[in-house]
Amino acid sequence: MAINKVILVGNVGKDPVVRYFDKGVVRASFPLATSDTYTNQQGETITTTEWHNIVLWRALAEVAEKTVKKGNQLYIVGKIKTRSYVDKEGINKYITEILADTLIVLEKKQPGTWQSQQEPGSDTTERKTQESGLREPEASYQTTGGHEDSSPFDDESAGRDGDEDDLPF
Image (cartoon, rainbow, N blue to C red; front, side, top):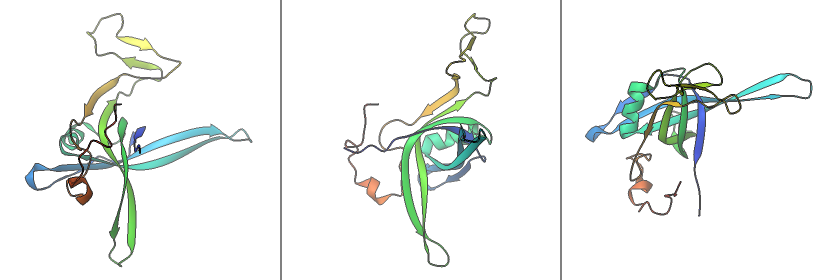
């Protein structure tokens, strides 16, 4: 058994680039930055940033076109896919992408707080979560059924039966 699952929480680097193909197929892509902060032996705080190429297809791409903007904090679930192409000079190039099947837009609130989606005025509308720093999502979107996260142009995805990599979680 093999598992290819990625979970990222990061900030959008640029507005999504959305392309429409034949038969209503839509593709959205954008960079997502994740950062890691640590203190080195000299006591200096070091922050490293990793950039990820996020790709969404079909309905999820349409949702991203309407809701995702530069600077948004997102929760992304998907899988890693590496593809290759030949550039203008005939050199093979490789690109690694995250094919997302879940997208959650997280609210930007003060650190340690989140807004509930309950009725305004409820005593549970705002809660402190200092220990975990979690915030309730603004909106959540997920593809359903089949292999929505794979490219409709992948030859290998056309022949899959889909059962071997479907996980119960």
